[in-house]
Image (cartoon, rainbow, N blue to C red; front, side):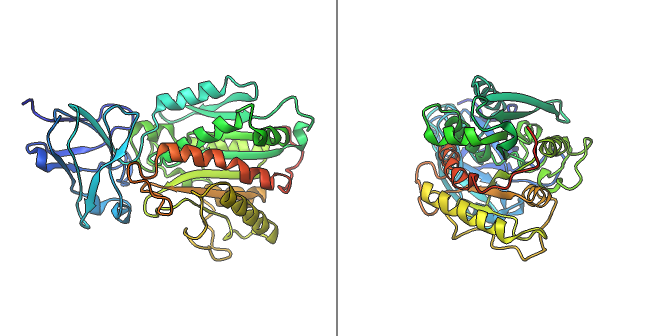
Length: 390
């Protein structure tokens, strides 16, 4: 039998091998981000174990960024990198253990279903084929990758550009939260579906600005939460810089040029097995008008998707306690607009569990498509920004 081997030399690959001597005791450490101490993401390929019962032991799981995230969590595995299934997994408070008997000599394991940079480029390319889409380059990252903005609207609509609502969707500030870009993919697919009546109304009344991947460097490097410089982008919104956080600097600059009436920031949560939103109620500028918009948006999303819920989440922030370095808080405060952070689980949706897949890329896509309904519900009530053509 050929010796076992593990490789990570591919997009988002990340793991540290401690021992491969025994297939029943493969010892691993989850690798930290390249320039920061966050460890939780892993993605690697095991070769040579076809038909062998394999036990993977992640020795440092208890010291990772979110150890509570391992409770009830199950590792994902795939033989073809397209179909991912949950496998038997346990956590004893220190070591995360996963078991599988691979069908082939090549099997991939990941913390969540990966969303590759190639797929990201394909998403930009396919979206750009629509007459509704203008692909705008904003600049480059520290590693030289493109920061890309999709501007989407119906140029033939009766509504003048200056009268249209400005709706922003950004995703994957934390690169290991790949469900966020799956969410964007589903959103874009529905928004650009010419036979969907919801998007036809929205495109007539709104201009959409979509950043599918806020952190392409961190994504390719296999980071959980940071960019190439070790910056947590969702703590950079008050004072971003081209030297440390160009991704936020460039997107924030574009927002200031267009204005914002609604902003959604898609993320994943390691610990909570639910889909939920976090608002900006802790902001000093939070008003009853914004509270009413939040309530209307959430009520419409509850009606549109049973995968969304409001019973579980982060709880209400105390008035005046908001951290304005976070995207949702900064955008809402700066533009006096409705803004939400969308959180999806790494585990499963406990209200609608799926034994084979848990929460998945496909379910994230479906949730992304469903968010058009609450957008439609609040579109006419969003505050207009000072006449900007966008």
